[in-house]
Image 1: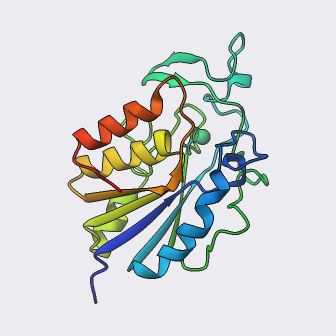
Image 2 (image 1 turned 60 degrees about the horizontal axis):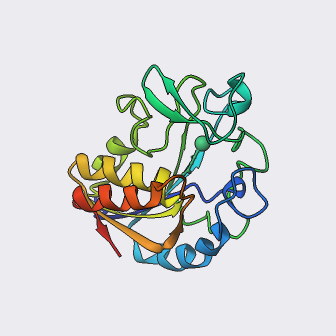
Length: 201
Ligand code: VGL
Ligand code: ZN
């Protein structure tokens, strides 16, 4: 058995985060070509997919009296309310049609529990419920991860911070990411990642 020391983790390159999608990130589709081009350089390629039930608690439509992009208090802490997005089985939840999915060895879905959101590919927003990715990477022998995708200031940043906390060596390639930038979230995410020892390139 040979170790796969370097893993590429492609975060949420899904139609709803691309122009025309329900939670479109400016230039979201521009990450597709650079991500496809870097896949052959890695021993292990993982794709993540935001995968919400229609009654998900992070959707503003499911929180009477609240609007998208408001912040509310959930039992596990503060939570941004989003437009409904990446509903399981919808076109919006599908990967961007240009994304090379054949090289992926694992697709990990997250956010599938109605009561808790999951920005990170490792832990849900309660910072406790595991997605299983840590165990997968450990068994694959991957101690070094490179993160790319959408959105830089939410799912990519949360994944990078968790990966660093788990003791992995973490690089985020910013040119293969795009951000939502809600109320300074991008500057905060960059500062948090730098403080955690994440390499930003
Ligand atoms: C994301 C907000 C809600 C992301 C997912 O992929 O960054 N952001 N769900
Ligand atoms: Zn989501």
